[in-house]
Image 1 (cartoon, rainbow, N blue to C red):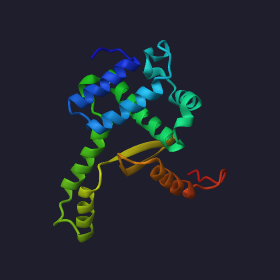
Image 2 (cartoon, helix red, strand yellow):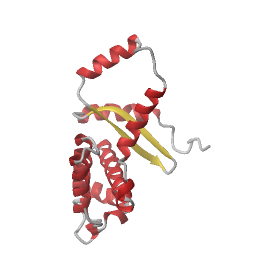
Image 3 (cartoon, helix red, strand yellow):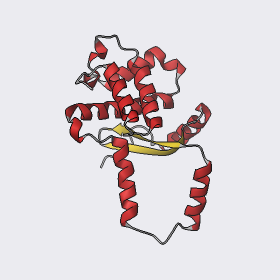
Image 4 (cartoon, rainbow, N blue to C red):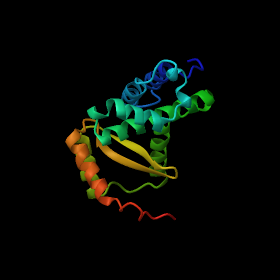
Length: 186
């Protein structure tokens, strides 16, 4: 892989992550789809160096050009996936020898934590959850930066999430919001 920073190089980088087993194929596919669609609106001269893009501006343009075909939740998901893909791409380009995909790092920490605190076995509730998890379709976890100092994590979303299901989730989150101007700032 060369030090090229183009849209095409980003897509090739994502393929590389999947081919080498550095990231789950489903994660690669979802990030690649987001990158392809969102960055597909850019003319070639702008797409030559995707590491210098202002993602908020690109997403605003994507929304203006293609937004009617997507729900607000889908647009947020695309932005989150593209941000993760670009962050990993930049990290790789800066130091390929020490690169670790962001998704793999979080999963490894959870595994290490479980090993450090052994338990006698799953509780009855955990057993039921594990049993239902094996029957449920595969799911993903998303990290969504909502402010410069705040990132939220949404976990357990099925890969076959429908628009109506996404709307239900979005409505629950909207119900938790405080009215504008009454936000708590520590």
